[in-house]
Length: 161
Length: 283
Image 1 (spheres, rainbow over the protein chains, first blue to last red):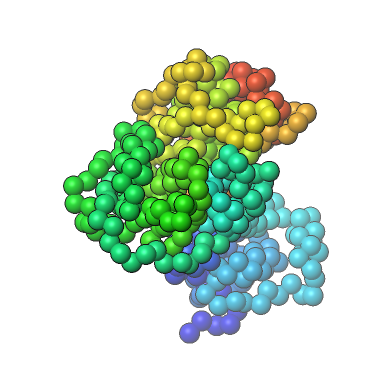
Image 2: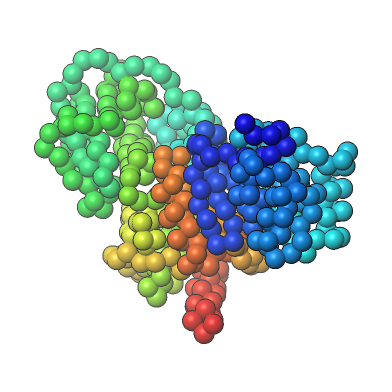
């Protein structure tokens, strides 16, 4: 069994695509896409359930070629938690500091980029292709068409005034 | 939200089925003329990529029913009412959109991105965006300036990262008109692209009055994240979609910027693309 402080990267229900220096992770359960920058990707890949945070920091240091602090790893883990990318949530030990304070602290000392995870929800298909065609108001009021300028169908067959 | 009203259980008997981009779809109706018009619409909607199939019931999961009831035409998809109304013209426009969307969502070997696409010197310029962002207007202006027309609706990208044509009449909203007018590439003095070509540039832009061109080049990851909201196949097949988006992002320049009037901007954009391409060749 994993020790409580040894974070393990989630393996199931995800599609992973390397994209140059970044890692794209798509969560098939929530339809969320995450883009992990290089540092966040190193940390996530180092989370094998047997390394503790200091060991992850060592691993990331060896990959990045620069010394990485435990604080930086915690910062990444905090975001991995938030995005449900760990098997089990691990409470980030930021020593009572806010994420912003930790970023300031690390920023002054680290040569390695701060870990960043950008996320978005892939929209339902129809929303990605809103055409605003309609026969009556029904189509305009359908949820996927919310981007159309109007919820009523005009005389030309479009959801617009 | 679509009303979950089941369609009439009776068997209409009149139906046809087709396959477009590997997606089998059947249409049935109690209205013979409407079904005939729909068959013509299917041929036009997929630019020769739709094949009518002989056995209309063979393993088809995507079923549309066209019902004439109480002076209204109603469209059902797999038993769910999508919309209904008295105008046949609007009904056929709506059907056209829904059929193309069905194919875009369920195709297995292509990634469909909601975007305008033109070809320029053998490479595609892809303009992703939602409706009413000025996508078709800019596409039309690029065609007027000599670019080949591929689509004003979907960028259809294969597993090698190349874009193929998915044409329809360019849907323009003319001044003072609340509707859309379909215009061919030829009517704009342009030509239709015929071959699959690699993506050279993806431009995320939106018309904003008085805006200036302030290009921000996006990295691979950021570019893919921008593309995801416009990618129709994302939820159906995220692994294939991400792989193809990655191919596109690795090879193309990905730029984000607001823009002003399409008329002036189109020529400028083609010059920008030429300069960038030359620079990329030199480096």
